[in-house]
Every structure is written in C-alpha cells, then in structure tokens.
Image (cartoon, rainbow, N blue to C red):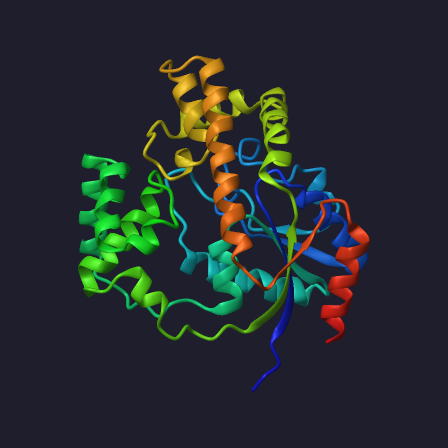
Length: 306
C-alpha cells in the first residue's frame, strides 16, 4: 500500500483567526493554503465571505478561492475532486498542503472518506429542487426530520442544498443519509493533523459584530450590488450564504441596513455555534488558542516527524 499524503488541516468557527494562524504555519513549514470553506468558493463575494485579500494571498500560494459563479453549486464530491487535485499540485510545487476553513463535512470527507452513495438519477434531484423552490426550505426540513431526524439535526433549516440532497437520495434509494454514512467509507489517500482554533462563542460574538462592520467598510454593500448585476435570483446558491442573503434583502429594499446588520450578526453567531458543536465532537482535533503559534508549530512538527 502506498504511503498516505500528509496534510495540515486548520479549522474552527468563522472569525476565529484561522487566516493569521495559517500564515504562521505557511511561513514555518513552507506551506500552501487550500480552501476548506464551502462559501469562500464564490467569485462575486470575496469580502462578504471573508476570502483572503489579494495582499494576503501574496504571503503564500492560495487555491480554490473565488472561482465559482453565483448560480453554480458545489457539493462534497466536487470539492473532494478539486481539493485532491489542489493537494497534488501544491506538493508538486514543493509546498506542504494546508487546508484552512470552517466546513467540517469537507474535513471529514478528506480524512475519513465519503459514504458510498450510488449515483442517483438526475430526475430525483430536479424534482426535489423544484419542490424546494415551491415550498421553501423550512417545510422541506420538517419532511427530513420525519425521515432522518439524526441528519436533519446536523443541518440548518435554511440549508436548501443539503436538504434537497438528503431527500433526493432517500427518494431514489430508500435509504437515509444516516444509513449511508454508517456504511464503510471510500478510502482516502490522505493523513492529516487537525488543528482547531479554540475560542468560545462568548469570546467570538463581539468579534463577529466588529467583523461585519469591517466588511461593510471594505465595500460589502457595493460588492453585493455588483453581484446583483450578474445574478438577481435570491435562490441562487451564492446568494444563500450568510451575509449575502441579508445584504440581498437590504439592496433590494426589503430590509433596512440596521435590520440587515442585526440579522447578519444573528445568523453568523448561530452558524459559528453550529460549527463549534460539529468540531467539538471530533476527538481527533487538537485545540489551540488563536495566537499560540508556538503550540501550532510543535503539533505540526510532531505530525510531520511521524
């Protein structure tokens, strides 16, 4: 059996300080950053989704940021294919691959493999998405609770993409996501050290409010208005992200800026809470304080020496 490829995974909730930590690791270990966040793939929303700036991307190579159109969707299978290519390319460049982001399911798939769900007929997906457009995500989430309460509890009732996927798979196969995920996974070619930025929700909340203010100062409203010129469909996948959805309501006149900011903060905090809950369940994660770069370096050095 060939030796597994070492990768460093730096995870944690939104706004926790992953970017600064990643720069430290890249400088110390000659690394290249690969996106591990499902929202930072969208081309039209670099500010709102907190993608690394052009200046930050000069620190070290960055891959898989800001390439997807607003109307396009990405799922874990597509991400796995692109991340695998990016990891190999990063190694060919003589760099250590560093996966940085807050999408826990992507981390799990990379290091533990994917459930071997068979390819389902496109008609099931199309029918489910049409039903979602007609009924909305909350009622469809209620349907999922009745069918697969364990998986439904892991996703937000506004996460239309995952709700549709779970319902379509169930309708096509007669088996729930929870059942499929309990089956043997596809093997993964990677081994990784998992570092988690250790912050509490109470510590994070005031930082999230300041972060939104900084995004607005950096041009988030103008960014949303420009994105609207390319795509004015609020049901598009890019617009569904936190910050994007709230700003859409503001720039189209259905919400005041004050209410937009309040809802944006509320939804960001709720998302950070879900991220923390997900990551805290992962017993493989080594928790480090945001600025404890020395500890991060020690853990990565230990991992690479194994």
